[in-house]
Image (tube, rainbow, N blue to C red; front, side, top):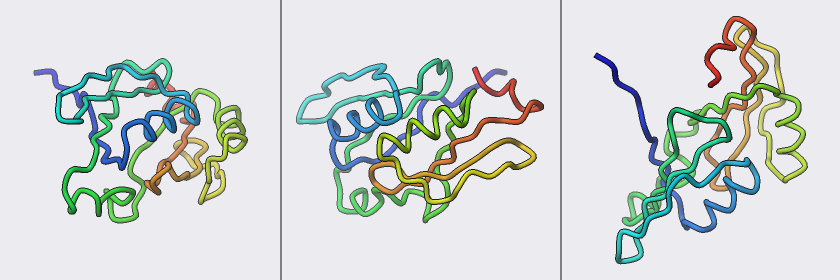
Length: 137
């Protein structure tokens, strides 16, 4: 049997605001943006060179969903962005106004720092160590 996680839903306040953040600040690409009617859209974004899981930008429709924006994991790191060059991406992201809430640190699994997305969700930016390099693309 072979299975894979195709998409992870990320609850957002506004579609276009989220698209702008992910494409302009993180260099993600819009994979799909399809109208579903009644103001609803199916939007997939993905980091450059990604051949795996995409983010599904899901606009909050209920009060419960609105309350989850920026805190889908109760304050824990939510998503993990692997890179082949930590310092290139870290410096570029800082220049673009990304807030890093934990500074870079070298761990056995790689170099990592924690940043906020536009709603406050926590992300790890990680360049895997040599032993873990096969996990990128």
